[in-house]
Image (tube, rainbow, N blue to C red; front, top):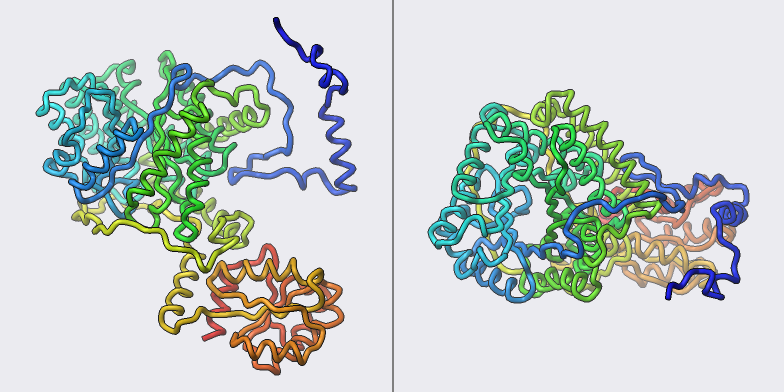
Length: 621
């Protein structure tokens, strides 16, 4: 029996809701304010509306096979090959279906990585049956490029059938050039080396894919979704052209290239980005006269969103990222352990990274529906607009002569630098929030543990004949972490953190909101905020400040109380020895009087927090 909405009496009792009805309600709440206040924007300038109509005639985007799970990849990057082997075996026995072998010198190594030697490869892969459906994804750089050959030789030596081994070889000199900011060779010299390696692996019987178009280098450097997608397209087409020039039929080259994308905690943008890449790559395939086949897309949860402080929040960020990549159609997902920014992750951090995906797949059954976002007005619109903006940037790169020439002209780097600067400004002003770092800090958090490991140091790779701006990796929390490190050093040397006295005026109803804001503001920089009861008597306030042992103070209350008591309170604090007096909130018409009374700075939503906190440290010194 089929049930319709009309058969459900509860639903039938209500008139259909329309967009126009919703707008009337919203306009009533806005009370004349412009509707545009509710419209957000991405760093690419794409508008994010508060609500969308359902997308009609939408079709699912082909990606993974129907109801097929993505590969649960586990990162193997321990420089100790025997410990790395034990980790790999344990991961595979406990739910991982693939291993991301991260070699030193690779774009995603982040300070660690396997030694790119035959001996290390033998030890790391010992006891792992590569022809038993276990996926390998090699993350290598020019310095570790021989690791791909060593893996191939290991397969041959062990007697595995290369055609039954699921190995993605990760050859990607373009990503390395982008991160380093130089290349020892021109593109005409790089092409034969890459295509020669690929043809050699094909001759051994490997299916590939072999060349990776890696968008992570853009994301890690602070770039936008459109910039990341355009870099992947331009890199992928460069490898396709190289293979064709080397005599490989385009139909064969089509399966030799795969993509890597970063997945971050912005659920909707990440989901739309993965969907957009499939549509964009299909368009390239059509332009090449090929019948589109689903591109293999590997996802890493984002490096730049990891924080050293309150590292356990990274688990939540990684969960959102893996969720979004999985629903967006990723074929393989690697969750960066939550302690990676602190050092080499231990067994607990690795287990959490693995189990994050297992829960999403085995308990939440996220892979059971293909492209669940299809038909969603918001996601379909975002996907479409990302495609349009990416194609324009891709065309600009092509007009510049392709991706290597565009890097040489700093075309991409200038765009990424502008986006990075805007992103860093929003982090500094706490418009983009990093829980535990730029908001809601915990000065008494327990440090997460990591393994002891010495990074592998590789010799320099060639002479920098072709120089350009480097796309250096970054983490968004670094400015706040530097301040927290300063606080920790003070605690270690003197036994106490730097302190600020919260000079609360009036009743709790008057000061609680701004005192809470001020406490979070200063403690994001490691300056411990000493709370106080509300004061109406300036002398009592000054006495409390003296007893606190703090060198600086911050007035906290409502605008009404400031008008009545802030000037007297500031004078009393100054007389009591305060080196610097802040006021929580914008001063308005009181600014001249407040500054004359001793208030020297104002903190409010949207001010530059790291710069203000740096100045606070200077004044306390």
